[in-house]
Length: 80
Image (cartoon, rainbow, N blue to C red; front, top):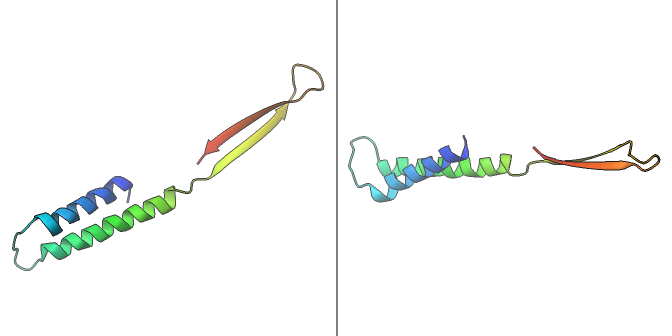
């Protein structure tokens, strides 16, 4: 579940729980709303937990310089 889907589930659940007052036989829409809000909140937490701590890699390479005997260093930052 991506972050957008989780937010949509949370919003849809909030609408069903708090804004809609309709009686449907056999289904309690408030309970369905609470379930959708819980699923959306869980999706947001999992999305942040999985994609939040991205790994940062720093590489430093030394290679021949323009002046003999003077190394040149290049640093590359990459985020995964």
